Length: 251
Image 1 (cartoon, helix red, strand yellow):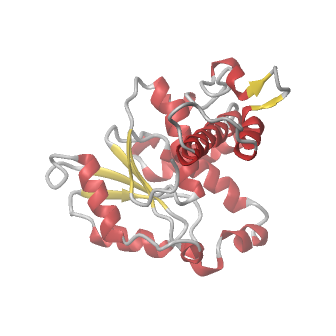
Image 2 (tube, one colour):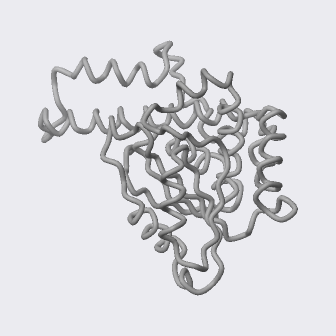
């Protein structure tokens, strides 16, 4: 699809985050390392009118920004060239879901992170995901046909989202789902020799076909979707994307 082309063969010099700001020739280290050093070595003399607490807060916030910048750069670098095997699997999934494999223009991507994530965070209920979807669709959510791509490894989440959705919503999903979600995906990946990983990466590409996103950035997968959305899709589609974060986990 046209959207998939945005993720393929992107010249490395065009990546917005991969620029000289990630390195510091004067100090011979990355800005991430230099930021860590500044957290430890505070100046003996603070600027006039600035307390140690204020200076500390400023440096910590700057450090967080550098980490976020570095994370985004890493995501873009990893996706500078998508494997044809992954693209082929994505094409197979598209044909299985949509007529002629064509993604509806108004598709919304919703990533639901359940499974074993309860060990790290309080899981967001289906009702909140559905309300966030209504909000991001806006006027007409209950009247016009809506197309929702639900990305989740937990089969329960898919079932509950679909059963709780308005009748004018059509729900799609692809990628691996687990019969015993509390085990987590690692055990399944080992059991099927990487097939789940291939299907998940293809599903990730499909999730990026949307212009509207409901994510939970306490999940690394949602953060990955969001970094690719912000760093590549949003910049190359004329800033066409929007996102609602139901469980923020990043700055």
